[in-house]
Length: 74
Image 1 (cartoon, one colour):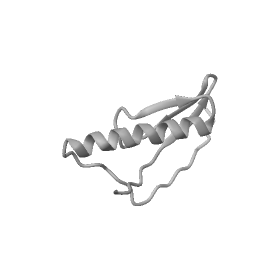
Image 2 (cartoon, one colour):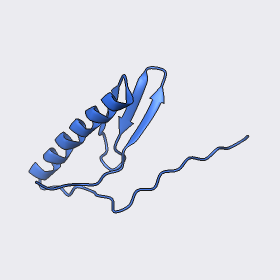
Image 3 (cartoon, helix red, strand yellow):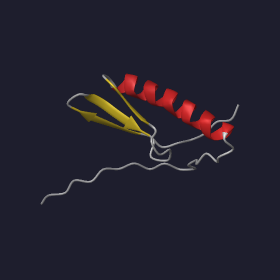
Image 4 (cartoon, helix red, strand yellow):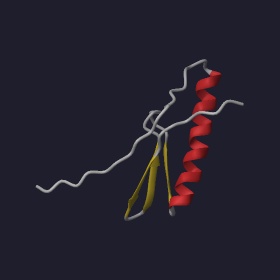
């Protein structure tokens, strides 16, 4: 088994949580809670990576992840 380090984004909205992996186009999911969204995304990532591997496609990885937010007044 191989381990991959991938960035994920989880956003809260009025319907729950939306989660996606920016490095894997089309790899996204949702959940009613943060934990559910994260677990769903882990499953989606595993399926996505397995599909890429079976097709002989490379899987993008990240050596370092930095996340921040900015506040802008307009």
